[in-house]
Length: 220
Picture 1 (cartoon, rainbow, N blue to C red):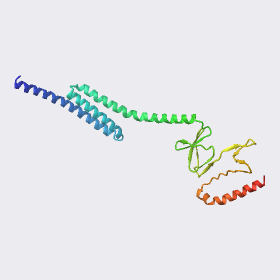
Picture 2 (cartoon, helix red, strand yellow):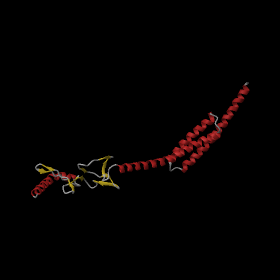
Picture 3 (cartoon, helix red, strand yellow):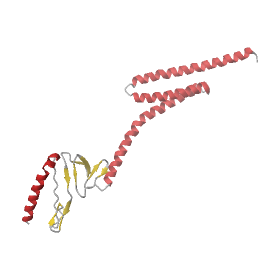
Picture 4 (cartoon, rainbow, N blue to C red):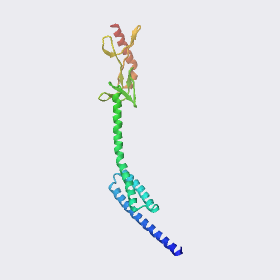
């Protein structure tokens, strides 16, 4: 092969490469123009535009590599870009839908669990765990608890006491008072919005309660 023929073949290859690159430049320019138009019309949804832009850039890179290095037809390259853009648009559109239904499913499961657990008369919750009050207790801050038909709140206006009930010999429910031996044990629960004031006056209150209990014992 003569030098002239080699040079002619090289010129032909260069011409074909330039033609291919020219087609690719037209392709990139067209999609760049379309991307700018989309960015302008969707300025309020920057996150979605960024997602589409990533998909388009990925598709353009695949198309460019296919045309230049793999001899891909221009129509096939366009199909690659369109498929990448379609996938990106689908993912951007379906994400909020899946998140929405995921939230609904979570709420439904939570409601189902609360309905199955034995909380017919309500059960106080604290930091996601059930707080037992079989022996009574004091709620010092606003606390929500589940109850049949909705939610309840206690302690919203100040400390509140929970007093267990017991059924007496007469069949009535009342506050439990233990007894035995030579005397009775009486439990007094006090609810007050002024905890500090109660602590300062608890000695005086204890003396008054002692006198009242003594008077009650004398009247038995």
